[in-house]
Length: 219
Image (cartoon, one colour):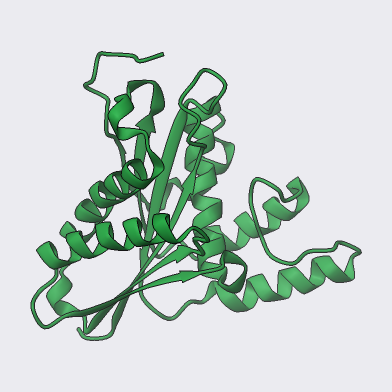
């Protein structure tokens, strides 16, 4: 097979572990290979919207107007030759010892990547390229890299290379697509709104509710 395997990551929800915070925290991975056919269409849409009068730097589902989301989802729907895997965390069930950002985020990401990579025939690729949004806090960035590398060292074949990138999402249409897909899955779990989820559902391989069996609520 050869070539490169791309994984783009995004998360939704906040880390306020109280009744004031979101009910869920969701992480999603998009697994894909080139070519990235949606790029040209998203660029055209961006400048069509700018010419129509909008001030649009990049696509971000939670902040975009509905008219913007509609056209972006139209493009995403045309190019669903990808795999989506999500890890869903019901925050009330998270033990307080796991809630510190430097522990919670890497552990949950580790679970997600272990599943994603375990489903791939990694020996068929020359290199695995993993992208997250830019992470300004050095401590968090280092913890996440450590978690990713820990999983990769366990599951990646000896001669398969890998690299990890923390790029601003505004620099990558694929990170913006990951944002839209994760937002759709998060909305379904958080508020029961499946309108956007239904658009991408054919590409969703898994939504793993990691604490589903847990019976204890901490708040």
